Length: 269
Image (cartoon, rainbow, N blue to C red; front, side, top):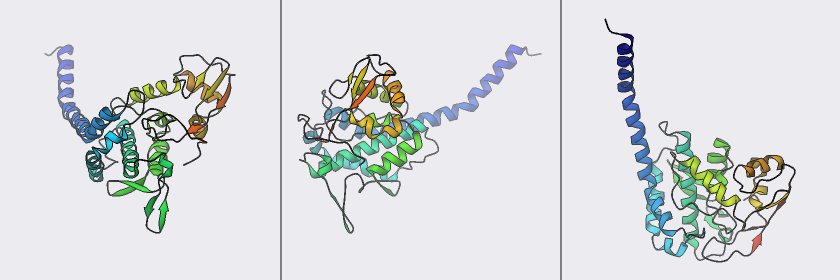
């Protein structure tokens, strides 16, 4: 008569064999997503500078590779049931960032992405509202991706440290594509880098001067008390809950290899 330990061993062995196809399918999905985003990953690794800018001139020389990547997204189902929520978040971050970069390249050299006006049927649209990328047979604007596919779905303010706004005052681009298996670590690293960069935020115990990005997206970062709590998750300098907050101007100058200038108030784009 089999002992309890043998029965348990057989049960666990059978369970492992039952789950093995699921693990294999998940691995296949992860590999497929990694291959999908590899062209964008390679471009970022090659053309993101150490000081947090983008080498648009160098990117322009490989524009065809970026276009091929964007065209490959036309056949992708962004509601793939095999994807995790993190896979979906990473997908839309990569899509937004590649589309924004390609849009800049179409008009380069320019001083700011806000200088762009995209010709559409019946007139022109801003770079934020014009359809700039097609995914799964549907066209999306940058604002649609940010608001509908990211903010509304995930309610994660860290995405604003991951979106490539192409602006000098925006968080530096991550020098690799976002990956669903590592996206929390990637976004935490982006938040930590931006919040502790004195170019954008000056932090002290009783007073902080922070980027206008936090003001523009206050609906997501919450009240000033909530914002201080958020900052304290990443800040190297502890901030008192009663600290005063000032918001700095935001430069929309292109995050090319040029100094920050032409400060503008960050409005709702």
